[in-house]
Image 1 (tube, one colour):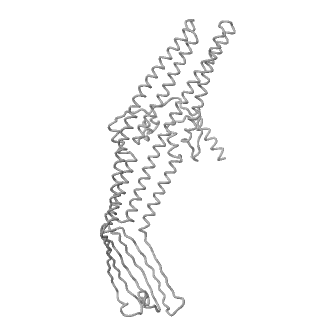
Image 2 (cartoon, helix red, strand yellow):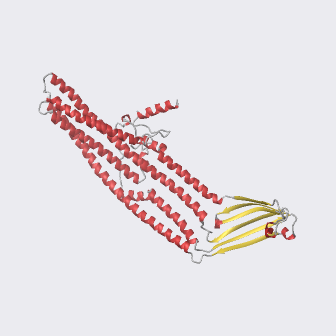
Image 3 (tube, helix red, strand yellow):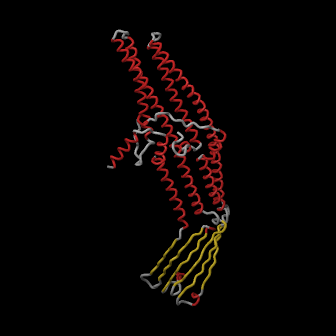
Length: 468
């Protein structure tokens, strides 16, 4: 039953016009590349969660029991530790118990008869205090998550751009196929009329032979156009899928009746500044710089003294020596100072160099954005003129065909000249289709640089029809 439903659904889809909007929705919902990158975002979220695990509350348990020998002492310990981000510190509390007899070198494990309760903590000073490895790892993993989301949008726009380019190739080749078929149909109808006139003795056989030659030429044009359209359909179908992610075959039934437009007014200077603002690669460069800033803080901190301050309070319970009945407080400090500091200085030099490399990449990318926008704008201007010229040429060629038909009808011209007129007419039509498609593709490329392809699909009349 499910197979039958899918079959009927696919058949229904294949009989409908394929619009930009339908392709757009299919890509955003079902395209494997986008689904893959959504999973990569999920992976990055998991990495953030993993790195936060360094600050998880931990419990440690130790047990030591002698099963033979002179001494009979046992030792048990349970400690709960909570890392704290501020000053890379931690606090802990726990319980220890050492019973029976222990050798001299293990007397530190001996506690009151009912055990020892303790609480303590440690904070880091100078190095590893405000900035340290675990905190930077969490910060940078959050930034990696942000980059993965930016990368998803970059890939999504890239897929949409490629799909729309394929869509216009497919649409143009479909319309060219329709034009060539119309041209062939004219020759076939004329062949029938000529053969009728020849059978009545009104015309010599030469006219039918000559027209047959034109038919063969036009049949080859149709055959080539069919092949080109089939290839374009296969390529476009990679972007058109159902809810199961399966490719939906595309054919002539999906061709729209008209060629839509995506034309919009372009303000180059404003768009260039906007393109720099929204460019995903430039955003990721900025994030990479922030990550390097965090690494730089660690490199500078490595040149500082390493000092930690610790404190602990404990009290034994139960029968033991008198001093173990009292609460005990201990304070300690650890200090370490790198004299040459080559590791920190070396890391600092490397990180500063990486930041400067990113700056150079930013400059090149901004230059590339400027050049690409300017180039596409020139392309849009050129194809706009060429398309309008081709449209005008087609109108003139159509009028000439009608004039030539009248001349043939009155014996003032011949089928050879009429054929040339028709060829010229449909050549102008094909050029108009090609220029129209290239113009729309140029607009799509332009708005892809602006990361604004989604805006082209927004509804402009309260939600009843897309912009194109």
